[in-house]
Image 1 (cartoon, one colour):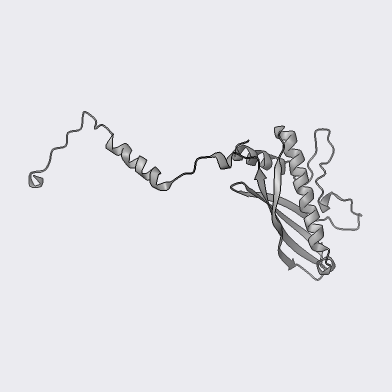
Image 2 (tube, rainbow, N blue to C red):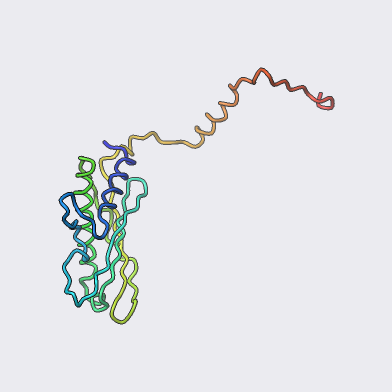
Length: 178
C-alpha cells in the first residue's frame, strides 16, 4: 500500500515529463500516443492536442483537448479516436510512473468517456475537450482513520481546560463584579 500523496506526486511528475518536445534519456523524442506525435506533411499545419491530470481523493481525471477538422466531428469515430488517445495517455503515465518511482501504478476506469465540449472555431477546424476518470488502486486511503469533526472540536476544547495559567498573570476581579 502506498500513500495517496506519494502516488499523486509520481503521476504529476510523469505528466510533466510528457510536454511537447520532451526527450528521453537517450535524446529521442518521447512517444505518448497523441496526434501531435504522428508525422505530418510540411504543407499541413501542426496538430494541436494535449492532456492534463487532476485529482480528487483517490480519483484521477485525465483531461484531453484537441483541435480537429470539422469534417471529423461529424463522423461517428470522433469519440472512439479520443478514447483511444486518452488510453494511450494512461498507458504512458503508467510506464513513466514505473520508471520514476519503481512501483506499478494501478488505475481502474471509472465510468465512460465524457465528451464535454466540441466547439467550432471555423468552418474548417473544431476544438474538442473531453475527460475520463480513473480510480487509483492500491492506496492506503481506506486505512486512514475517519476524521470526526465533533470529536476534533471536543478534544480542542479540552486542551483549554487542562492548560495552566502562567505564574506572572494575576487577574483580580473588578469591584462591581463581586
